[in-house]
Length: 240
Image 1: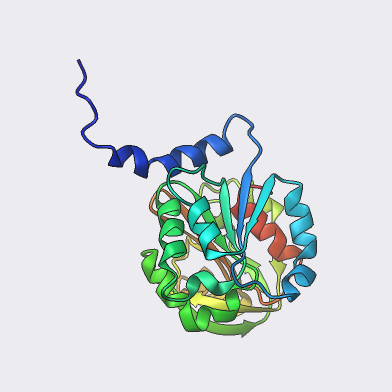
Image 2: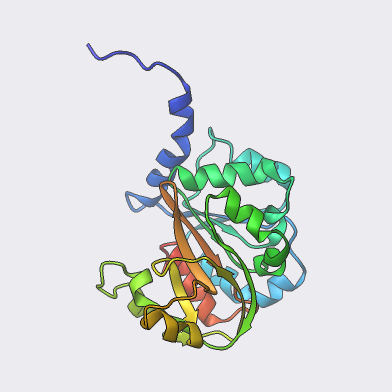
């Protein structure tokens, strides 16, 4: 006879992963959670098109208070298929009641993407968030110029399936992160691309995605909303 479970902790800590898997399998409608804890009035203007398109891809729930976010992200609650962090509130220290559940969610099997207005405070508080997630990423400052797709990061197996759906070039202005591995950098600026292809990568990227535990954390540092960034976010979420 198999021994009984020794604790209830294992059941609790795997609830989020199990729920996330259930939400993305069996043709279930994706459950998309927007964390919008300090959103500006301009977000609806700049990202209205994105939100409209997102609503057509699944069940979207927007959370605007720390208390609601902590409650929805509790282990006993159904986990989202993906979390989109749309503003920088979660980056600020002392927001552990939201930050800790988000990090746990990623580690246990959920995808999270930092996008929208997050870039505004990456220079001040981004390093703290990335460190808590176990990543060496740090803010590399604002960079102007076109971003060039890095297909080997988007499609590691080399089939160009997802990369083929993304713009080869887009963007004008973004807050970059550094200490990014080549396989994590979805896009590079044109100068960075030259270094990358020559084997002398500088490790900076405006768009990156890295494994954290069982799933991945995405970062889209675009300072201006446009079609290219919308497609990138959808791709990171598995919704493109």
